[in-house]
Length: 121
Length: 110
Image (cartoon, rainbow over all chains, first blue to last red; front, side, top):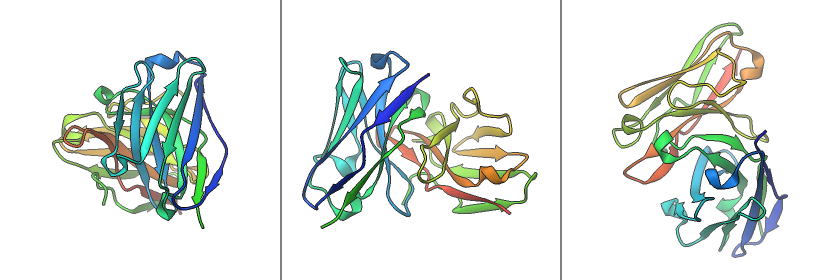
């Protein structure tokens, strides 16, 4: 079955960077994109961006442009999300999700377990 | 401010039916498929409905989805206490070139 396994919780200071990993199994990695979604305390789900596991093309949410980078390593079926210049309101649980594609409404059919990133001085 | 509009909360008694609305525009719901997710904080969100009205395997037929114009609706019948969660609609917005979510609806089963 499809599984997405994320790296563990992180605590970072404002201004630092964080890199979260998402290891996929149970399907052909290159056939689907990976989206990253976060949920801050008391807030709703927020889409951060998407990366093609086929060719590495990316599409980032406008508000995160310049601070976020998404990459993949097809040799290990792993996706990565790096967020730089962290601020306190980046404190959230970060999820990776398998993306069925924008032509299918960008539905996310499998999700990682989530990675808590806490930004605090 | 979310691109898609959902009611903040809905409630109903066990065994009853509830509907959750999701309103958008011609650049998102009016032009794309809608998905619905169930999320309990501390767990991974779960896909309930995709492509407006399709259920992934393992999702009971108590959950249903529909779309008309620029709005979509999630229906849940035979409510159980285990259905208490936050529910989100989502779709693709062609003007933003971005996936978008509603603000979420908290379901309380009284």
